[in-house]
Length: 427
Image (cartoon, rainbow, N blue to C red; front, side, top):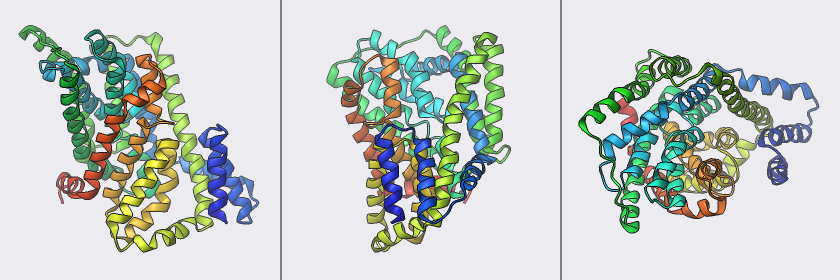
């Protein structure tokens, strides 16, 4: 009964176009009434408790750092560096897009920020070099989802808060899978370049190369500082976020000198808007999570999946299918917050490593960011590339297939996640 009420409220109000945070609050009220509760104040208390978390403080810091980098010229330097490294290869702008996405992933932790910052620089360049604009935009969007996989990752912070797993260890679990994802995207780009006959190359003189290296060095160093500082225990993820803000301010204001004081208001407003959206969803999900637990929905879900516990791979495949469908119709953060408390007890009972599963879950739901009909990153791509949603949705299909292959590869071969993770963590 409680599960049916929750699902009807969740999907019914979503179909009416109500924002997901409000839908989750409505679900909390519905479950409260079904379970016989009547304390309205408890929902407000649960919302506040949900966002009153030290690890979640990293989110506004990384959001702000990402905005500063976008406005301060840091993303343009990353693109130049990527072009310097791989631009001389045929179709080099595409390879540079993925390399830039990998580097920017170590700065922002957000697929939307990656698509907006790098797309605004790369898509006009690719258009001017004769690339099909729909393919180029789709490729930028596909590369953008590397950002939530490679640390620092905002979804991993949310995951750690929802499951009480170590955020540091969650961060480290994404390094190798994120690089594999970038490699597979470069492989498919190799065939696209030859199919469409692209011949562009970006070649710099020795003096230009030295100048680009000097300019880009401050941008390249930051991901090393963030990831290295977290791994060595010098800073927590939250402190790393604060460090990223200070570093980005210094570099963009005093080294690149492209950050005007007049932009600060817009930068803080954009960061506050992004942060408030995430935090409201987190708080609302905590409220509905309280009543989901009270209604014993996780136990009921576990009983439904009970027959698959003895066959972990089949269990993972069915969960992957469920998450892929949910990723198509609901954004990444609410999916993590709704399904983590339900699924983690099941996978742990089946003997599946929770950090491995967290990576698979995050990767799966990140693919949802570029999958219609919701596809948050696709809408960013439409705005930056100035193309319509249907055209971009068709162009993204080959890249979605490649990313599903990577997800299944990691699913069938857990060592791709666990061996590097244990090595990085010194186990």
